[in-house]
Length: 590
Image 1 (cartoon, rainbow, N blue to C red):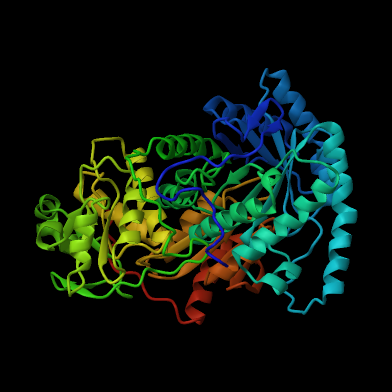
Image 2 (tube, helix red, strand yellow):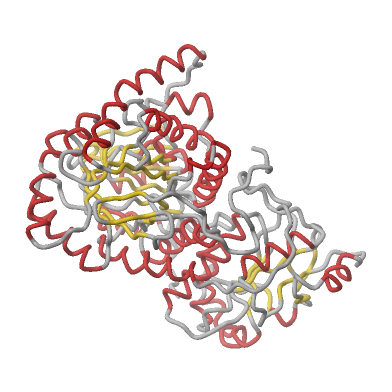
């Protein structure tokens, strides 16, 4: 994809993307409206009382829009009772019906709720992982079939004043899209644009887009490409964007992965509404989402007068090509692992217990590294480094009034690529609560890593040495820069989920958490399950109530396993494929 496309007006100065206004019930998004926070309930849609209680709990927590799954027309019909119960309680939070596979459920849901979410990958198209070539004629025939199914829903939403989300998921692209565009951000964008064109044929514009994926790199690239493509379509294609990382997981890892994906885009001025998807009770998503919005909004903005076209392709990840340098017994740059720096003060606090710290090891002491700190706006300093015959280790100086993302992008743009860059999460460390510190570090470091910038990192915002190191390694893992532990892709629970996701995810972690570099997906149902298996080594997917299907890659290999046996069968499967090792006698947590 050509880098001539632009996804934001200035990579070095924040400017929010200008989108049109979309109305969802009493909530307006896009234009100059603040970013809207959403979530999704987990109760069975047929259980009116439980659904109403959960919607009210989310609204009380500050959730501004609530999504509810509608698997079938029968489920969708009960949205009337849920809506009535919520309104009777004096709550006017807009409701959204989540539709997959069943167009008739969408038509029913549109009668009762303020917004319909459709997934272009499965609204009409099917996903059977079939490999076939589509002629142009066959492709157009498929598009005509989509028009016949989708256009009446557009007409109904327009008549009733409903909003719509055209929500592409990386894990559920249709076979038609996969075979023409591949399992790519381009395929995600094209899938959504097909549906948008059908909506526009009826002069319907009250819709938003989303491009969700469990891999933050894929998600970021897809949203950037979508924004760039919308701009080329014309100024009236400025629809709002809903941001989210699917299957982010739980705990610290889930918050970090969400911050990398969502926060990186918000920091570039992209996004009008967000949902943080955690494998936890939905109410815990709201404070994380609210804090993400605040952190992205409050990044410092110093003056950068220069403008540079990026030397990296923002639509296709590639690590910046630096030369190798040696520091403190480690090689940095090139294709070497991204190394972890630590301050002398923190080193002194942990050096006596390195054998107790497991994988969270400090590698290079900052003060011993010979790193050169500069202001990237200083042309004289840049020229002096570029004049050096040998590659240098360079970072941005502390204390500057610059947003770290902009500062390191500017450094990468002006510095010869042979020089090695040490990334920092903040240029002005301050005492703060752990959540904002975590989010700020993940946004900054994750965004830069996903740009391909950086050969080493130091986390300065967290003062506790052990916690600082753990957070550093977890950010590197979530950004795909350094895999040092088991990687989990775990979806948030919803009304489609066929088992207790939180309990099951914890059981799988306990059984497999020592398998470094193995990626395991835990999916409550088949909506995204098979698709996300493509990014995982093994998958645990709800197939029917009380029954589990196990996957290797995206291929289902074991079916209808009783839930009580499924975790053991998963470990057997991992062993069969040569990726099982016995757990060490003790495991260290920092």
